[in-house]
Length: 258
View 1 (tube, rainbow, N blue to C red):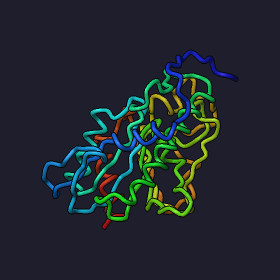
View 2: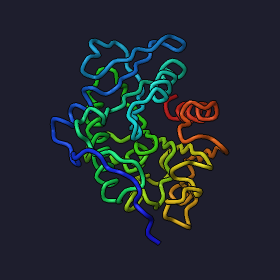
View 3: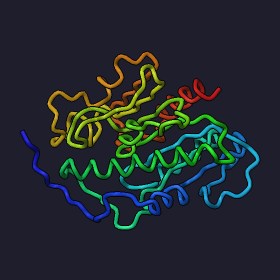
View 4: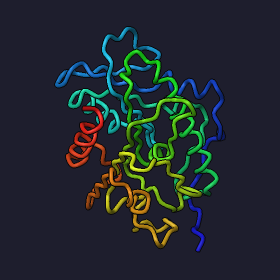
């Protein structure tokens, strides 16, 4: 049964230009470690200046609300606790970009997902020549950004990620995508962290539009021996800074970056 599209669309921009795409990178949030336990530096790729140290990187795709305080807190924790840098392309730098309150038509969601995927691909190309990059990166994303992260494929001939982290996105068919189109390589290390009662992608959502949904990446990751599924009862949609999430991320990145 088709769901009632009770949401609202604002903005008109459905595709990036070379200029808007470059701006999402140039004005991205870049968080660089200064040693474990030491306050990290928050800057942008266009303003970072001279850097003498190189770090493993989390290339992170933010959710529909942009680079929120919770995302900033998470990036600071990665730098200060784990000595891992984070760069977050900023989709909100695109004037009049298409935005929504759900549910809306799938073609609108897919236009947004295409823009977010383009941002990650562009950032991965710029990353390889960054003075602060040590050659290893993980692609991550939360909610809307989780779709882009799950779909990420490194551009042809470019360096691939060493793993993926997907937060608060179920990677399965529902109202939010025409099809999941996940790009998990066979046995690619993947960490998924979700609430069992996720507001948007859990089975309790009245407009989920998939009666067979699990509400987490069961089908996408069930045959991947290198994947980890962390399901948190009663967790909110924004769960990046829960102690359980930090513990799972620390263990996952230690496996990839040690």
